[in-house]
Length: 195
Image (cartoon, rainbow, N blue to C red; front, side, top):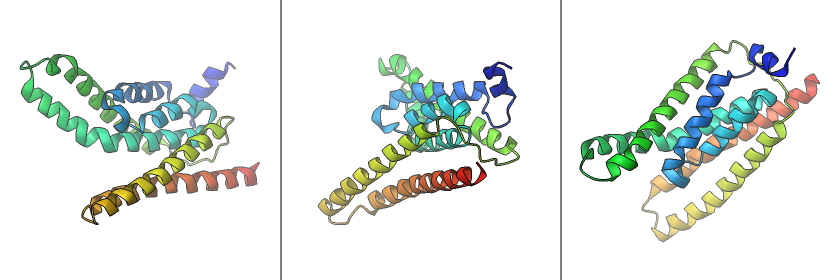
C-alpha cells in the first residue's frame, strides 16, 4: 500500500484537508507579525503530523491555541474596525482583506480541530519518526517562556507592580506550555513502556 494512502486510512492521522487548512491559517496569520507566534508551531505540527501522530497533533492544537489568543481578539477587532473604515483609505483596500482572510481561516481551523478532536474516539499513544521535531519545538517554546518571564519581571518592576495583567498573561502562557511539556514526557514514557 502506498504510504499516503496508508496515512489517509489511519484514524491517528489528521486529514490532509485539515492539515492544509492549518498551514494556510498559519501562513495568512503573518499579517499579525511577530505576535502570531503560534503560527510556526501550528504549521510544523500540521506538516509532520503523519510521522508524529500523537505529538504532531498536540503541536497543532498548541499552535492553534497560541495563535487564537492573538487572532481572536485582535483579528476580530481589526475586521470590525476595517469594516467601518471600508473605502475611506488605502488600508481598507490593501491590508483589510488579509485580516479578514486570516481571521476567518483561524476560526475555521479552530472549529475543524475541535470537531476532529471530538471525532477521535480513542487516545492511542503512537510513536512517530518525527517526534524529535516536536521535542525541539517544545524546547524552543520553553526557552521562549524563560526569556519572556525575565522580560515580564523587569517590566513589572519598572512599573512598580501596577500591571498585574503582565504577570497573569505570562503565567497563563507558561501554564499552557508547561502542560504541553509534561504531556510530551508522559507520551515518551508510555511509548517506551509499550515498545
